[in-house]
Image (cartoon, rainbow, N blue to C red; front, side, top):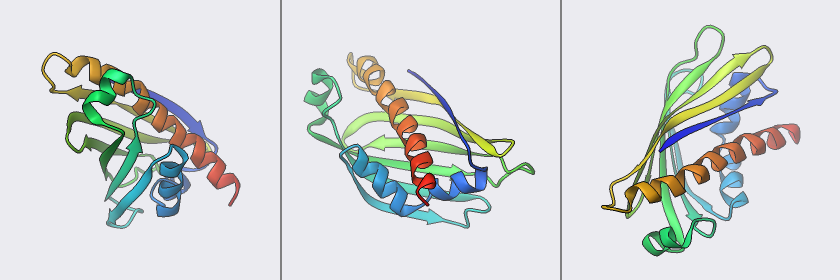
Length: 165
């Protein structure tokens, strides 16, 4: 299932990168959706190429019943973001991989932070796949809008977070 989300934030790419890698912010966004940030590591300096690994538990209350039968009441999601160094204008991109413990669902995506004047366009494109026989496509189709919403929540919460700072 194709994943495609985009939004614009009124902050430069360096500021958006800073908030997207801030442990307090990631904890806040996890709790905002009823989950918990279990661990966060950032390998490398965020002003150049780096890798972020976040492990979260997330509730499944918003997933369809047939999906919850497979996954239970919560999911443990590992998200690995491999960020390239910024381009001359500050824009940058990351290869994003998400896996769900005990569930054959994978997300392979690219997140771009595109400099637009004094703001940043946040774009995510990718694919959600599941290898569960006969049900994989239905599960991936059900997961895709939730992942898109999660990415939009991240951007919305980043804007609120930065406005309060």
